[in-house]
Structure formats: C-alpha cells, structure tokens
View 1: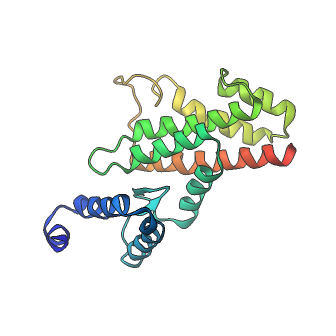
View 2 (view 1 turned 120 degrees about the horizontal axis):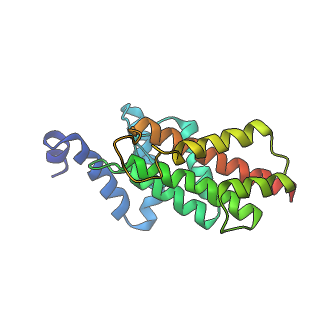
Length: 195
C-alpha cells in the first residue's frame, strides 16, 4: 500500500502520507517519529520538514529553530497566530500565503500588545508604550513598523484583494513567518530581561 503511494501517486501525496502517519500515530510514537521523519527527509535532501507539528517547505535549521522557539516560548495568542501561519503555509494542495503573512505579523502585534498590556491598541500604539518601558533601538523599531506597513498599505496583504494587490509568493510567506517568529522571540526576551 505505502509503496503504491510513494511510487505512483503525485509528489504531494507522498508528503500527505508522511503527515498522516505522524498525526495519527499514538502519542507515545509521535515524539520519536517526527524527529525520525525529519532525519530521513534531511538525508534524502527533501524540501520539507516538520516544524511546530506541521510538514512545511522549510529546511534550514536556523529557520526551523526560530519558528519552533517562538511557538514554544510565546504567549497563547502569539502561538496561535504562528501555528495558524504555519498551517496556511503548509497546505500542499492550496497554500494560502497571503493569510499566512497576516497571521505572522499578527503574532508580532499580539506580542507587543501583551507586553504593554494594551490588547485593544494597534502595533504603533504598542510600540510607543513599549519604548517607555523598554530600550528599543530606533532602527529595530523602524524595521518592525516598516514590516507591518508592508502588510498594511493600500495594495498590501491585510486588505481586500484588488487589481493593485501585491502578488504573494511562498518566499514572501516563508520570510515573514521566520522573521516574525524571530521578532516575537526577541520581544519576549527583551521584555523578560527588563522586568
């Protein structure tokens, strides 16, 4: 049965099978199974790895660690946004890169809001409050604001689709997922160091 899928079916169904086995395995088997799958995928130079429980097209160790660290160490809301970004990115039949980016930047926004204790504000509001209690390098602040602006401008990611909408690629979504994960981890570490 497995040989038939691996040898005959379209490429994405092979990954679907691996994903299915990992997800449906008994909980005692999942913990050793996912690293074993990742080791086999790396050995075979496959373009996918399990990251945060999702089989995604991310293979660089630093990128995987950035995402998993942000999911593991983050607060409930930021974890949920990053996990959803991963799910949208990981869909092999119909990936939703646009909404993956939305979820990634929403994770950063939720971290900023949580740190300053203002769940109703915007990222800009949160950054202003954050600067009052934390030492935030001006270039770091500007990088974060510009990244948010990229998703929020007239042809941007967070608005309704129009003819002027930005065409989003897998590379865009991967960049945002990894970068936003790094920003989340950095902000939590900054907050912990200053409290």
